[in-house]
Length: 250
Image (cartoon, rainbow, N blue to C red):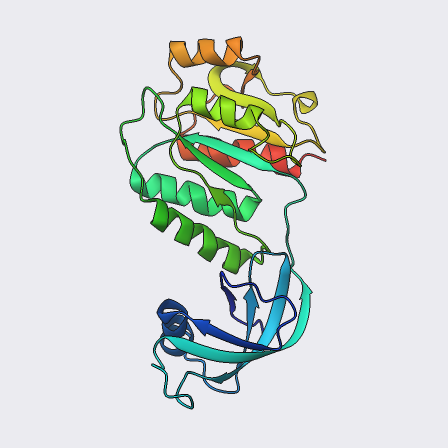
């Protein structure tokens, strides 16, 4: 039987006794999944390892609010089933709320490591609930066995995204990713366009696609513009189609 899997922000490392202060986690464990003392579950902290744990209690023994605290002990640790092998940056134009949330969920499952919402000229929605998007990414990571959580950026303009990527995501260890933009007027995507080992950034536009000004920006920054075929895809479909090409091309 597959054990339920939960993310916690506290580092687990080599701790054998774990106390988690989280009303949300306690609610999931006790009321949603109806687990009790003595039951097992899996915790992960985003470091790439899963920890099989046994529930010791919910705070009753120490007279702590049992709705906010769960005590466990770790029995075994193992490498998480899925850890992205390289950095994949999804620079997706802001679209309506439900659609963008769906994009975040599926991008997380496919192994995107950085999600950068882009405020495009044709974006009709101008804001996003970042806290909710992070929660969706966490839940998707829990479900798919992923050992880390994608980094969720605040909304950026195209120029801000270009600068961010050129800095190697502000990390001395990360290089500048290969970038590709997708648009119906681009040339057909070829296998040779897709690096198999390098980090990569994928730009997907909003409903109506990138504007002429934005297309000029891609060209001026040396970013190839490609299409996935003759059909016109919805924004969320284009995200999945493009990422599938990136992730599964070996």
